[in-house]
Image (cartoon, rainbow, N blue to C red; front, top):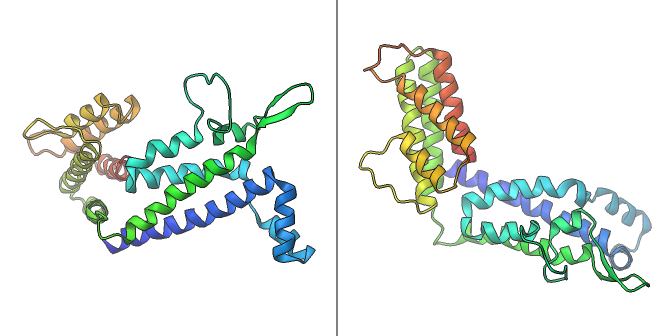
Length: 272
């Protein structure tokens, strides 16, 4: 439990720190004059200002990496805010009749979208409108930190994640020593348990009394939680798991079980 909890906390702290730097970089890019004046008041020395500016990341080059990492963390720890987080970045799928400060999103800023009117090209909206959107995203990430500190934080999945990690480590050792059926059986139990948890996360009803890995995968596909390639991959892992059933005449190979263990590990780290 402790290792996963500490890992999430460390990842979160780094994500927040990088987010603060990105917010500063975005402000500097969109509002250079005001930004430079504020720096002069704070740092006073031109050399310090130059050093500070050089250490700032490029928002346009770095944001997508930050966003991808943030999505993974939110899916795991704050899934009820995931759609809000995405909406602040993504352009809406339906056409906007007009683009205003209220519906301008971060993706618009990454494309450098600026709306002007009149012959004098008076600016209506531009990349600076993305500053409050990104600030909202950063606040959503910070709220995860408060959740860690809350007594209401549910650590069930963190405990389970640590348990699954240790079980897969045990499966690897068994496979190395030639106990391939036992190793495959353990990996199968981990995969089944994780898929059950994913169904719970998405409030998917499991009606079968003794559902299989394929049953869970089908439910997740039917509920649009996973796409066809992921569904097929899970089916393949289930087939490898079934080779370990003592009722089969086919002897599983160590390479097959190694593939199964690696595949299950990937699913537990990417599907929530």
